[in-house]
Length: 386
Image 1 (cartoon, rainbow, N blue to C red):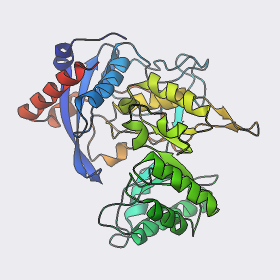
Image 2 (cartoon, rainbow, N blue to C red):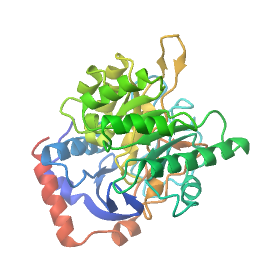
Image 3 (cartoon, one colour):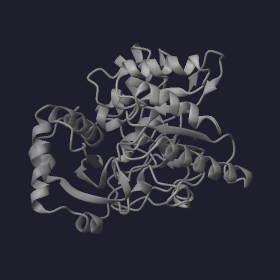
Image 4 (cartoon, rainbow, N blue to C red):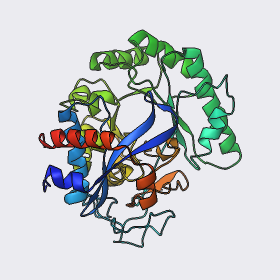
């Protein structure tokens, strides 16, 4: 992979601050660095708490996308990701195009099924919060609900999940979506083992839960939760996120038998190629993969779409074809403003195409000079770890 000089990256970079609709991960804005690379616009946006070595993985992803790694979209031959449209085009892509129109991309792999995301809203204070949020995800059959929020209770979580189920069931009755809606919950390591098991009991009283994402902080705790669920006869999978995203060895939690699902994110892992490697490796353990967002802009989410589009179908123990799981990549609606027009969700799916930022938005959303310089200093330090 080519390694552009740090100063070249800074010269090509714009730093913007994007306001969020609701507080997410404890923040109300998201700062990202957009880089005008030879192969199109890319993003570098490690979270503030990440050290330079971790931030370097995010930079590896950006360099891979912009200077020679896998690019947005998937081909029909299983040969990995490829460009579906010239990423250097100045206009944002705001409408879907035929999945067969470019490079012979296979139908279905040009499009990535995505899940809706419901933050830890208080449905008692605002009963219309969940219906309002889910309107932004037309056709989505899977919803991820944030739970275990600091300052809230399990009753709050149950009410939020039940509100989601109510909206989804009504959508099925009206024919807006088909099939069986799925609900996932994401605790971000906020529970103890006992709390996770109690939550699983409570949350499954009115319907199934697809999986508990990162219910506890450690692999040992996740393994204990899995055993506890089985002992109670609860058919709820356990997913690992932080234990993969921030680990030196992303497979350690899988080898420990601590999860059924690996949540993988392109930038934190170091690139699209690394996501595809991990997906192949965990499949040998019978572990499924969900490609998810690290709260990137419309530009940055392209890496996740490239990865999700490149993950093949699996064959289960019964010889049945298992399609890729709904990806957690439809996070654009969490932004009050983005760097270009939103990527449209069509029948619960996003198209794996490249987009470019609007020049006017790069200017209006730009950070102040001191913040820009702080990001550039951080980029130089991360670059030294590449």
